Image (cartoon, rainbow, N blue to C red; front, top):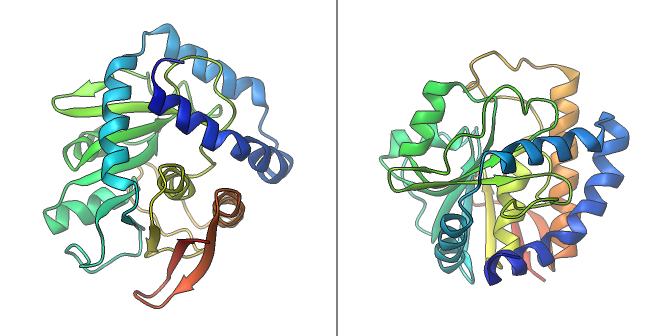
Length: 250
């Protein structure tokens, strides 16, 4: 283990691997060996462990004991909600951040993001968690782990087999953003602008409203519910914002 913060997070996230294996693998049929291969490919290019640890320490200080707001694709109103201490979200959240003139504390994304959108994401977030999916790990080289004053940290949905990769962190960008906040012991996690309908339009190729995409979102909600429960959080509908939910320490 390279640093204490990484060791703490890996310990907190360890049960998520069993939840993923039970919920997602049978439903989607993803072979685990491809997830491991994607990790090995990233580690083979050299990972900046010191940079990753430094950014994780910084982020934990931003999140621990705070109200974290995860901005979803249906969050239309720009501007920081007054009850949010920290801001995060999946890739689509950078569009909201740009419209609001805000920088997100972290974003959870993956390797198939349009290069132009990826550049925008690095402008509007401080830490980008880039997921190493087994089904698209070849579409984008892992690349450098820093961009000016931004940091890129690699994540996996199965157990890590190499140093400096964080996981198991969940399945989709949205549930990974929420799970990470609970792993860092946020006081509350508010999911703003989320539903079970696929509405993201930030990909280079249209994602469509396919049954597969809808099934992935249903699995994402199941992951959030079970993962948050395993970390001692209660999941409920929130009335602060339409299509919003909250995770509170039980």
